[in-house]
Length: 288
Image (cartoon, rainbow, N blue to C red):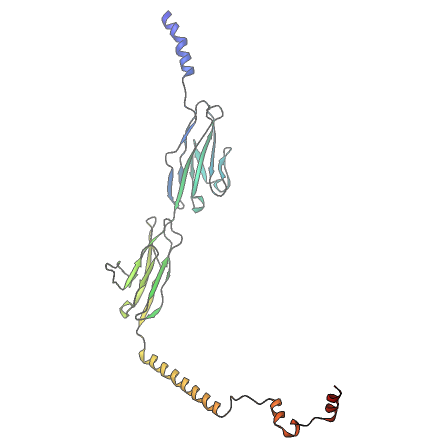
């Protein structure tokens, strides 16, 4: 018993002097991805050295750092639609405005290291919206034609596929194909359209988040160039040019475009006035 009593103070002293871990802050998931209008859980797990009632704060980074949770209350747009359990926050009915980087901060003034933090990035996924489609109503054979399709709201960005008369248009398998499809930009380009390209075209946008969306189909008609009409127009233009040229030449020969004689020239040619000066003028010249 005496030996045990001798060791007891030493054990107590060692327990008091044994190092304890200061405040530590971690998260179960640094990157969180949820669909728009669903709930997002931002995990924050902490351990303190001595302080049993540390201060919990959540902040959102951006152009300016703003408070999400401070002094026991949610702030700004998170008030009334967020909950906290321990230090883990759940955001309800998230929108694109909620996407960004969040920081959980734990302050424990009684600990030797009294501040810890961890970051969580929230990405809000948006299903496809009905894409806007630009489909020309008509074109002539042999011309280059582009059909465009775009959805600016989906996250991640949508990919696109085209349909003709409700049938999918497959990606060309050889380089000399008459058309090109870019699944990322949504452009369907015909290098040289033909009459058989006439049909009703539509575009489908998808990104794997929600159901794909298709734009309303539009009909495109491809017509041959009217050669006879073009020849007739060229003949008419040539005739007009010939008539105008002949008319101008005849008017020029008849003096219509000749320069009119000035009054000075008429006076010089008049014999009555060319060599005669008025007396008053002669006297003035002699005086000078």
